[in-house]
Every structure is written in C-alpha cells, then in structure tokens.
Amino acid sequence: MKTWNDYKEHVKIVDPVIAKDMEEIEVISSIVSAMVEQRTAMGISQRELAAMCGIPQSSVARIESCKTTPNLGTLLNIFQHLGLQLTVTPSKPTL
Amino acid sequence: MKTWNDYKEHVKIVDPVIAKDMEEIEVISSIVSAMVEQRTAMGISQRELAAMCGIPQSSVARIESCKTTPNLGTLLNIFQHLGLQLTVTPSKPTL
DNA sequence: TTTTTTGATAGCATCTGTGCTATCATCCAA
DNA sequence: TTGGATGATAGCACAGATGCTATCAAAAAA
Image (spheres, each protein chain N blue to C red):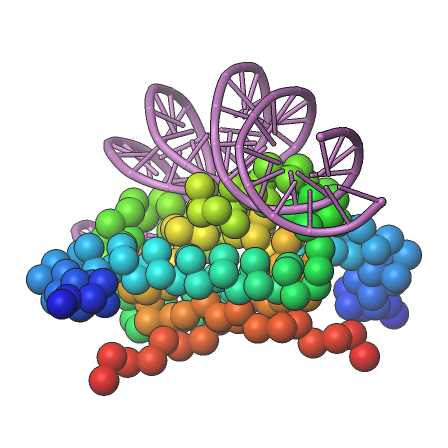
C-alpha cells in the first residue's frame, strides 16, 4: 500500500511548483509543532502564553491549529516568551 | 562617549517590555540581513529573485528595506529560492 | 456529578502585508 | 553622454492576519 510519503514524493517529482508549496507547508507545520511542544513542555496553557505575549488566546489558537500563517513579528513575539529562537541556516542540498 | 550599544543595554535594563521589542527588531533585521547577503552572494537582483519566487520586486524591496515585517509564508517562499532554511532552536539563557 | 480549565471557533472591525503597476535617482557599462 | 540595470517608493485594491469578545465541547479537577 502506498503511504502518504510515497504520494508526497511522487507529487514533488511530477510538479516542482507544488513541491515548493508542500515543502513550505511542511516547514511551517514543523515550526508550529516545535512551538506547541515547547509550550506544553513548559506546562502552560494557550491563555497563559497569550497573556505573557500580550495577545489574545484566539491568536495563539489560530496559529497552533494552522488556521493562519503568522506574521514573522507575531511568531518571534511568541518564540521569545517560549525561550525559542529562529535561526537562519543554509539548506542542505538535496542529495 | 556612549555607544549605541550602551544605550541599548541601558534601555533593556530599565524597560523589560521595550527590551523584548528591541530584541525582536534585532532578530528580524538579522534575518533580513542574512537574506540580502545570500541574494547578493548568488549574484542576483531583487527583480530576478522576485521572478523566481513569483512575486513582484516591490515586495522583495519592502522586506529587504524593512518597510514591512513579512508574513512567515512569504519569508519561507523567498528562503526556499535562496537556499536558506529557518531553524527552531532553544534560545541561550542570558548568562 | 458539578465545576473549572482548556483548546477551537465565530463574528466583527481594523490594521497590515501583498500584488500590481509605475516612477525615480543612482550606478555602471556601452 | 546615453541607455540599461538596480533598488527604493508610491498609490491603489484586495487578501489576510490580528485584536477583541464571546461561545462551546471536551477534558481535567473538585
């Protein structure tokens, strides 16, 4: 049986444009995942985190549930209060 | 004579809220700087990069000149075509 | 079970980023 | 000097994110 990853790889080969979009979605969701993990690891709720950041809980929820793609400023605001950092690195060449 | 960094450190101590804002600005500008550096290192113009990303040159210019804080999606789109990556790491504790 | 907490959603107004087009000054090469 | 390339800006309409408030179902705690 074909897995989701099989399908993903297939699409990436067939349509390079969509492939870029998919990679972007994957990156965003991985960033968001790291964000949720860190928050839960800190043992705080969305409401608590939102209060620390000076934003409403709904904004945190929207981002965590991937309803919106956050502005870089909003993301960095949250990251600061989570003790997370966003680093620029060269992407590995696809071997 | 006091340097700009002296002033920055002073403000960071006096007003922790503004300090957070300043750190955020510093992070953003460092990210943008890396982006500009990479583009120039690749020897391509804003117009060329914009064409690669499927966006207008004005959008690239606005971001590079820090007229706007980009959406995460927009930034990742550009980063992909620059061969750059955004990585989540725990921030170093202030020693 | 009852109460509280939590995450997800909704509606709305507002702000902001974006696309699109065009212009401009500067710089560099022909 | 002339012409092309470049980066910065402008105005505009539109799309999208955000703040604010409130609600709801499910989970956790009492």
